[in-house]
Image (tube, rainbow, N blue to C red; front, side, top):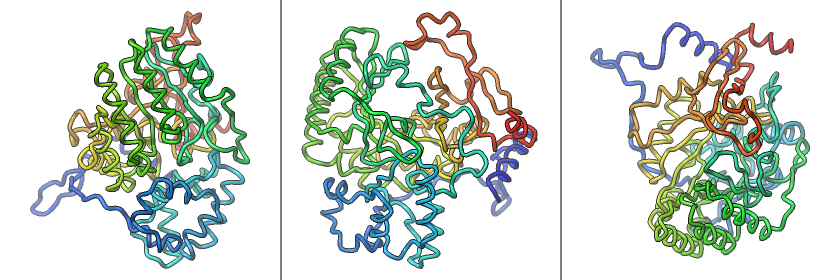
Length: 477
């Protein structure tokens, strides 16, 4: 069944009132549950199945520096790791994507590659098929054939789709919500995700995207951030992000956090790091663990909630090393470790995929399933994005299985509005795939806008999820 056929079937099911709750009858005439929970033991896949890592020891694998040095940055390095496992058709597909579509450069730690095609046979054609179908590969290592052939980008997509840079109060500090700010400390990560919402700033330039650059020296940028927060007592919540804070030298990050904790009005500090899952070895280094404990103790003493927010999109990424890194952070005093995933077609767009991931996080690692965002409207991302009605259906399907506190909210991050639960829209034009949203606060750029709180802000479904009439309307535009 093609993606388009599956979407049409889902649309028909909704229109006729059919959901996922029916299901076939099991033995003895008893109706099966739509989802059956089975506790699964976490497993670290054997990296030695890859020819290039056949002689890598367990000590090397646990070493953060070895992981960083051996990141895969280009096709040549990927070939060296894979040996004969991948056929030339994969590399041709990969190189075509880099030339024509990629908004992010390639950067894959061994830890992440090792979670791909975990059960695949070593026969090259079969392995290539399994690798292409792998959910982690789909968003970490996109190929040209992944992209939608007709609508690779939505007409309303944009490089800074959430207008974060437009809301900078100082370089790198986005003040969008009344009481919260986002501090973009740096523009690099230990790994680059194909769907990155900050593709305008983060990572190296690609043939399609000449990246923006932070202009100030890090120390000057941090000084200005701290000064703004001291002068703006209405801000109580600071997300320390980037890029990924795992790429900041620890002494610099610790120094900034300690200065942040000195500001009496700051009550919540969140560290954003996909590396907790993509490079857990970083968060297990003694100097990082010891430093994190110093920061956590200081936060607790001052009554500040310190949390780490990570980014895991599929259960295959959850391994014993990830669990060890998360539980170590909790053990040294971090109040919460939470997951903010992204909803993506072909990755986690089924109730089973979401629930498997959430149970692995909540039950085996101590990571709280927190948010799943709809993929943002950046260029060349349409093949990942879901329609709002699909996200609503998923939210309904996962309710009642997890503990309430560990049931994630599915979120639409609406441009100029912010995060909204997927059921909070004000109006929905299903024919044209346009939802309308309202908000109850002004961003920093709307102080003089009298209509900011009454305006309806649009968000757009992928065009290929519409019926024939809706698609024709967009084509005519």
